[in-house]
Image (cartoon, rainbow, N blue to C red; front, side, top):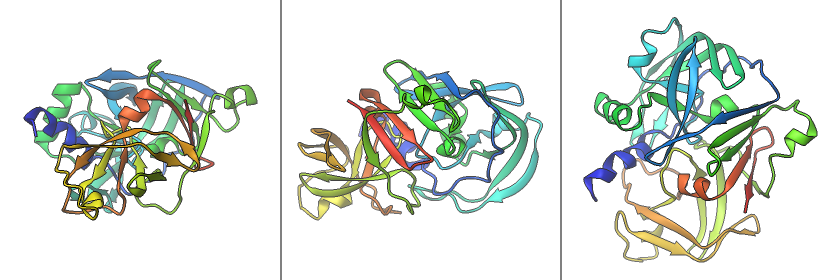
Length: 288
């Protein structure tokens, strides 16, 4: 594996969380908010403001937190500790304890989350140094902040549209396309099942994963001879009766801390299609 790929794979290994931090207060907002997406080295970044201080963070729906910020940027902010997150899980194992803080205000576009919760990022110093120097970003914004909304992820036009439940119907209709249900009761976030040439795959939707990938242990049972970093192409990629193939997977050999799913639908998929996540109704729409 080229050394240049290692940090990107660490992003995959370390930014999936199994649970959200403590709840964030319901926001005050316009019903239809558009936030620009900044792409740096293929990673989607958003600007949030924490107590008025701008912080660029990776948009990572595979992360269960609301907002995780590096200690370097979280330290100077006015905040109070309100708890400890103890049950986070990543692809490399448990994330360990992390303090949860309350801040007066988180702003994302026109959205204002008052008395909001922020968790301290758990990555090690080496990873944070690589991440900040490569992306000029200092944390992750996860799906926990969006659970009341429909969110249209339009990477081709570099924008994220956040639709409030009380938005008028003409604004609600921006969430459209093929309807793909999500499966509830999953500890690893937004999960769909796909019928493929090699059988059914359980996949996590994750904008924080650079490529769509399949765990090597899933295809080892078929003795296909793939090794870490190889690519596997399937002609059939069918989710809930909708054919989205062919689909290319990168093979990842994660033998330790194996998760209870088969792979990820990564950011390369979101780069090709406009995707809307309807969090309240537990479904995803894909515009072909």
